[in-house]
Length: 503
Image (cartoon, rainbow, N blue to C red; front, side, top):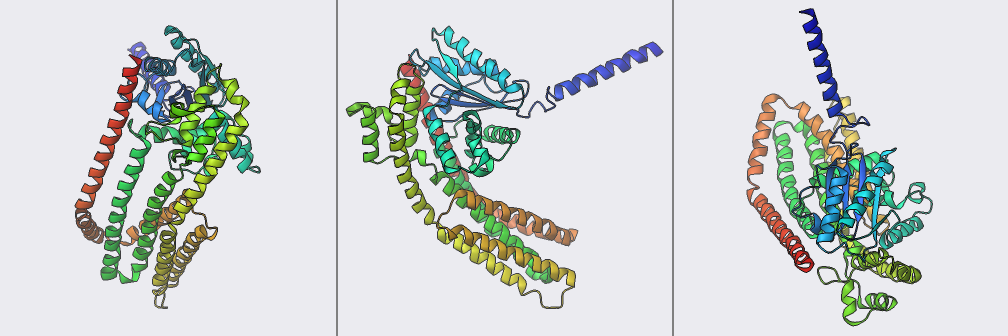
């Protein structure tokens, strides 16, 4: 009997050990925690995040061709990195992107420790091995493409005293730009984060993205959601102020402060989305003079210039750089591009400068929104200050004075955004986050003051207010459905075209 118990105990210990090994991979991270960031650029640009065991947690098409390649495909997320990269390479070959003319596939891996070299070796072997099955000989390179090297050189020139920027490698820059592309963090903040934090942020964002998430869809989605959130905030904030005015007048300052912070946060979130999409200089069509200058450098004329167009028939910085990247990945043509690299970069930089000036003009159109927020915060501070009339306990007066100071400070922060005549999504996002944090703090304090009965009453009023937003919610859902349908149709049509051309 004793021997049996010992065996059972040993089996239980083995089971516990097995479970712990399954739950945590070799570097102590959970199976669902991202540990590596992988890019494969053929012309479709595909980004993957992996756990420490090499399992793919997320896959994202970083350009339109990447979205098209991944659309409707299995065998990538959830697979080991070799299988996933093999399937990506196979699809690129089947759809005509990977050909004998594609001599170089750009690959990179960012990870801590020995994982980086290990995964890069697996990625490169998988690309080369799969290409060989199609009779295509390729080499893998971690050197920067034309577009990435232009971006890297430009950033190092723009931030000469920033050690983090100066230390950027092409692979790390890809990771930083992937984080910035989520719209959740600025370049300046992203470049300061360590590798682990950046990979986690990118992985989480990519998992949340739909496979049809084109830029047009993402912009339409943000606009629809922002409109609804603004309406919801206005309705619910009014409930808090009204309830405290009637039932807790001596605690009204909580509701006024919360409404000010929350409404401001929602407004800045909406403006941040507008500015973020407006700032994507690469998506703006170039003027005729810029296109002509680039075409002449490349020796292109007539219908050849159509090769510079994107799927919308427009010639943009992105579409030109996509074409140049293709040439850069061809061993026969790379030297030709390199020979005129300085001249092309100068033309593209000049074209981008024009676009940046236009973007600044667009941003300036939103000055009134920033100014209105400043006035709203200042007005909330004044309204709260009036409640300090000497009849409240000193501790409460001290709390109220602190709120007034915070609101006044944030009002000045809003004014500072306008001070230099330049409004950016990074600035509005920073103010949004500060306002949201203050709103959360005040909400928690406000909730603690209420009795259980008051909470029930207030929740009932809030539910009634939300139900009155049914029309606004219906409009949002309709806009989202239409944006999704348009995005799916666009990506599916491009994939069908690729399939037909490949056949």
